Image (cartoon, rainbow, N blue to C red; front, side):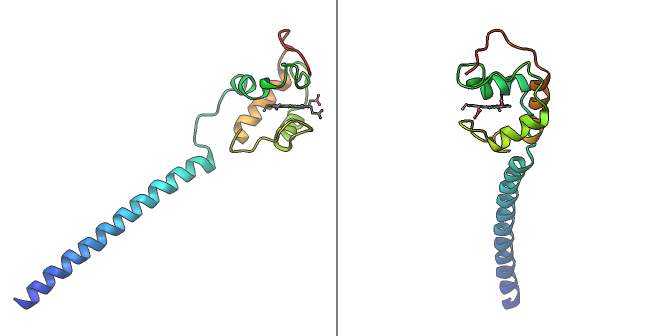
Amino acid sequence: MRTRRSLGFGRSAALAVGLTLLAGAGLAAGLSGKANAQATYEIEPREPEYLYARTCGYCHGHNIAPIIRGRNLPPAVIESIVRSGMGAMPAFKPTEITNTELEALAEWLSQSEVDPEEHGG
Ligand code: HEC
């Protein structure tokens, strides 16, 4: 009787510990899953045209910064300026524009045509 009782208690205690561990592991997995998605950018890359219009076009082509379309600027130069910034231009971190997005954006910009609607700064 005694043995059975203590065994019963032991089991439920073990179950409680097990459940706590499972909950903890689940939470940790959930959190690290989220962190991974941010660190490795397992999200759809945004299109160059969209990024240019939403981010760069705020200044470039709108009287604030020099025209950068249709100038055949080398992609490597564009990438380095975007990451380091230049004068009044802020630097963009990989958390803002991913490496994959930046590569495509630089390639697109380098080969883009002049947009007659744009005005330099
Ligand atoms: C807040 C305004 C602003 C934003 C947003 C911005 N830039 Fe700039 N950018 C500037 C300014 C101002 C300069 C000129 C800096 C100087 O000459 O000192 C510049 C310069 C540059 C140059 C060099 C141009 C040249 O003629 O030498 C490149 C390339 C460039 N930016 C690319 C980009 C790209 C790509 C983006 C978007 C990811 C971007 N910029 C977003 C303001 C901005």
